[in-house]
Image 1: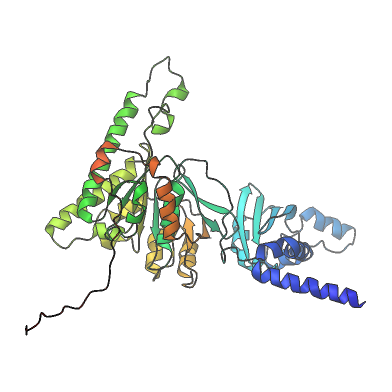
Image 2: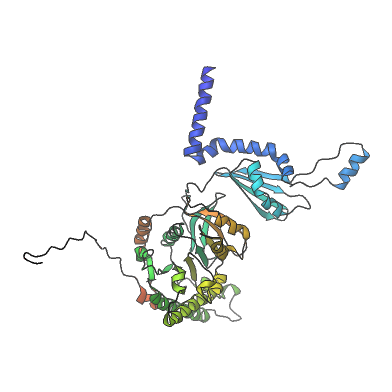
Length: 452
């Protein structure tokens, strides 16, 4: 009997240690079993308490009345599948007539407390089928990205979602994106992770960093073009627009529209061109968009209008030419001047890190989802890198990017520097290798002998 108690005590200690130090191992060994049993036992009562049941059918009520039997209970959604994962459970249900997928989404917080799980996310699979992704522990507390190699061009695994899924930045699906966040919110680390993920791919990186290049200049070995002030940025954007025009001329030349040409060989963008003619895709990263939109005098105002016009033109026409935008900033609103809201409307992808006020969150998600605005405002300052990611369709989720140090990003860019393509229009903006500057202590000036 003593040996049994010792064994149980050892198991309890091991479970507590795993839960604190290795939550994934704890979930796979103990948590998934307890959670599965808890969900199955509480399922009917939880569905009834959350208002996710429907009254019995009329023929059941009539039959009970005729046969003098008890009134049938309310019907819960039928469980189609309950599948454990490395981070939680996936419960797929067939909803009853009269129910809506929105009912489950609105009750996700109550379901989370009722099933004693960390998070519950609801989504509609198809008509009458709803899936609940339930997370057993906080996967964003310690982000560990899976060791998967990115094989798709312009697709980068940049963060982990709160449901345990990998959040990918896919430029083929979402050509342009906006990234807002306050100082020390993790916005620069997200951008750094994105550059490190794009460095091994066959893409051209173009950067605009008006903070004298302190964010992007260390990664310049992998950049085809880089501008570190508004004047250079204006010239760079004009050159990029000129390059876009040349790409469109190539597409027009190679469309080969004739009766004998198969439909599959007719193209309206670079992706259907032959491989030997296809231009390299371009990703333009703007570190702080407000520095491009501010103007203190008439000359700067003319330059600012030209910059915003070129950005709008690239966002409207660049997708077919393989040009993609990643715009970052602390705020992105109409106070930056005319044309800014037009530019924001073209940025389909939205990512909001911790913001200082609700207005900044509204700039990213106000026209998409009020729930996403509330989630962005609630991000804790003690969890840098946590963000809310969504798109213009209204869907959103909490994400957190891994902490990529500047040294890791620099080493990745240096290792793939040979992949940096050359574009004639952007040749004047090719960054020079960073120069090491050694700053020593300032020696005090000594007066020569006899001097006053």
